[in-house]
Amino acid sequence: MFGYIKKWLNYILTGSFTVVFAACYGADMTLENPKLINAKDDKQNPIPGLKVTLFENRMEIDEKFTDQNGSVEFYYTQNNKYSYKVSIE
Image 1 (tube, one colour):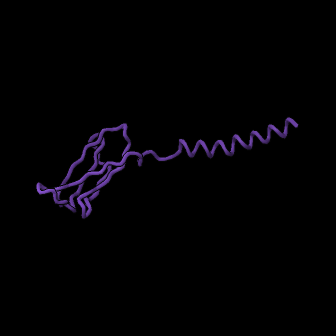
Image 2: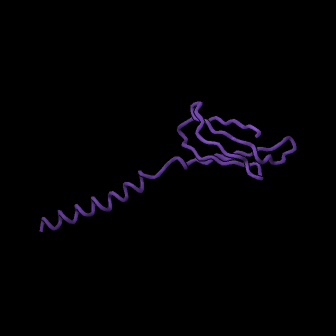
Image 3: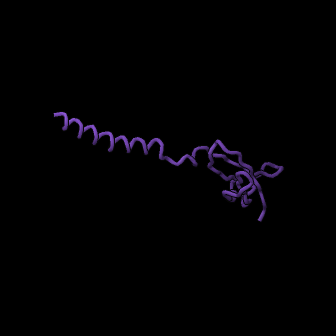
């Protein structure tokens, strides 16, 4: 009887626990914090097509272009400090 319970507990702990652990701690956290940037001119009109570059510790990590609404969205981890550079191409 003890062997049956031991095998059953081993199955539960190595099967289900592993899945729960991976679901909670194995998730990619880089998409946790969205940052929406809106580019507008002095008349509050959206500026499409601007290149916005994201830097982390002076290292370029991503670049995107503003859409027709003048918006671009980045996802990043909250623990780091980021800077942005906007350029016209």
